[in-house]
Picture 1 (spheres, rainbow, N blue to C red):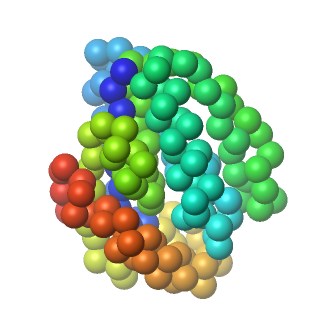
Picture 2 (cartoon, helix red, strand yellow):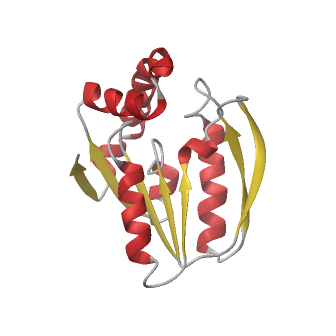
Length: 163
């Protein structure tokens, strides 16, 4: 059971890299990608201790070869409204802001960090998701930077890439 975590600021290319990695690894075994956007509890409560507990539960179950479930957040209704059961896989990729935080690194995950200039990342997100979230994204950039600094995520990731 292999665990990979892809982290870095919003708009850095984590999801694109995860898709490429998934395609490559699927030639060797079963693969599941978990997107952090599905696990966040809205804008304000996303990078909380509750998220770390969810990641601990996911990584522990994966490494033990057990199925687990995730509650998925609906960004239109702003609540968790679906659950997904995740069967054991050979490879689990967790991607998104907060994916390579300490609890995941301690589980032995291979970790990737993507760098990007803040304004470039912001524009990528707004182009993808719409200008209506600009206010939330500017606050998100502040929140993610605080999380990264507190967690020392970039410093502790094994592989560092630039978009």
